[in-house]
Each structure stands twice: as C-alpha cells, then as structure tokens.
Image (cartoon, rainbow, N blue to C red):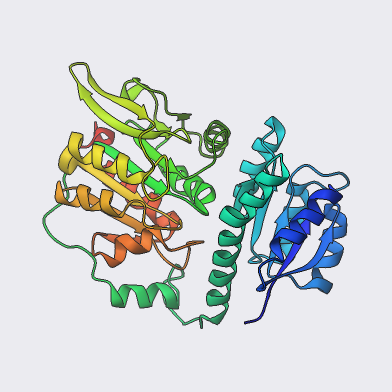
Length: 367
C-alpha cells in the first residue's frame, strides 16, 4: 500500500514534531513536509505532493484562512483538515474555513497525552477516510449528460437505488436536516434557497464540536439572510426560523399544552454522536406525523437512517444529497440504499425542493 503523504502546517515547532512522531507510528502514514506558516506551506505544496494537508488556523505571515483560499485556487480537491485550539478567534475562523472548502476540522488538545489520544481516535480515522474518498473520486470517469448536475456516480446511484413513490405528500409543518462532514457549506447553499420570510420551522443536526455551534449559526445567518440560532431548552418551536442543535446535546421536539417546544438533553450518544439526527427525526415524526420533511446531507456514518425510517413510517418524506456532490456519502447514502429517499439531489436542488414543498397548499408558507 502506498503511504498517505501529509503536509503539517503549524507555527509551533513542538506541535509539528509531536504530530510527525504520532502520525508516523502508522506505517501507512508519511509526513511529506512540515511548514511553520502558510507562505512556507504554499511553497512546499508542489514539491511535497501531499495527499492531505493538516492546517493550523492562527499563524503568522499567512494564517489558516488565507492559506486555504490560496491553496483552493490551485488544489480544489486536495483534502484539508483544520487543526486549531478552541479560542474565540480560532473558533470563528475554523467555522469560516469549512465554508471556504476545508473538508473537516479537529480541535487541537492542550496536553501531549490528549494529543496522542486525538491522533489515534480522531485524526487518523478522518485522514484515512478523506484520502480514500478522494482516491475513489479520481478513479470515477466522467460521462456526458444533458443535466449539468448529474455525474456518472449520481447516475449509477439512481440506477441502483429505487426512489420512493406513492401517495401525494402531506403538507409540511417542520423540516429536519442532518449533516456531518462537509455539512456547513452545504447547509448554507440549502438554506439560501428558502424564503426570506420563512414561516416553517427548520431544525438542524450538524455534527460539530462543543463550542462551535453558535459561531456556525451566526455564519449561516450572515450567508443566508435567515434567522439561525443555537437551540435552547424549552423555547417554543416557532420562536425563530432555523434552529441548530447545540453540540453535546440531543435536540428533540415535545408537544405540550402550549404547543410544541424544543427539548435538550444529554442522554447517551447514538452512533457516537450527540446530537444525533436520529433522535431529532424520531421526535419530529412522533409530534408531526406525516407533516415532516426530512433531509439528509453529506456526512460519515449512518446517523439519520433510523430517524428517516421513523419519518417514512409516520407518512412523512425524506430527500437526500446525491453522492457526487457529497464530501462523504455515508449518511445520505445509507438512507438512499434503504429505499427511504424520495429524491437524491445536489445541494442547490435540495434547497429548491424544500422551498417547493413548503409552498404547496396547506403548508405554512402558502398562508
């Protein structure tokens, strides 16, 4: 097996040395080069030919965001993982990096023991997954299509997977969205297609580290013009347009005499996730029955699968992002392969379909 070549970009020489030592314990990992700032990293890219870049956010000369912008102009599909400590500035910049094309981010621990655990449990698995996915994408052969949103991978998926057909869809009273790796940029595209005077509540589970949800909500608000907020316990569902589950807490809907409210709790993770989309989707199906529209976007794993089944069993509908436009077609792919999806679409078309469903007679947007 050809080793995975990593370019480590971090202004701390200690961090660079420790990461090199820990990563290369894996015989299939090779540190192709290291760089103390973005300028040095950009100069080393062509010579080192890495399979993935591990990029710090706060650096002198050229910071992580500036480096990422320059890198993406020349290497649009090279996997990049942001690796930064949880500071106010670092948090905001890490979230912005996800919108600029970073594939993922991981919080940089403060201690050497915690760094070793982080490399083994978080960093190495994500490196392997992202590099493998990019390798598969390079092997995909393009095909001609009259539809510019289609690709060979999408067409193959459509041929292999039967989409749901049946009775007319019920009115939509709530939209639930699940996303993980690659999700923030896709969420911005999907939400931007929705009405600016949105009346139907939208609830989102985005797998993200604790401390990042509020910054993500703020950035989505700026990019979409919608009111996007971090979910808080016991608030009425209609108090804002779009809610994002707080990292570290499951988000559920609960019906009470006053209406429907948000419920947060810290029961055990599902699929190693808290929040988990399955928890939100199941509660939405229980509260709203056939009036739920579920959406599953890019992400690793199968979170959202059992929740989508609950929505379908209650008479609701589910749409998923297609494989070609996904950073990782894990969550959406599991729903599609289970035969639970009404449609597989690019992010732009996902947003358009949600808007179309919300405007149908009987839905809140049509009033």
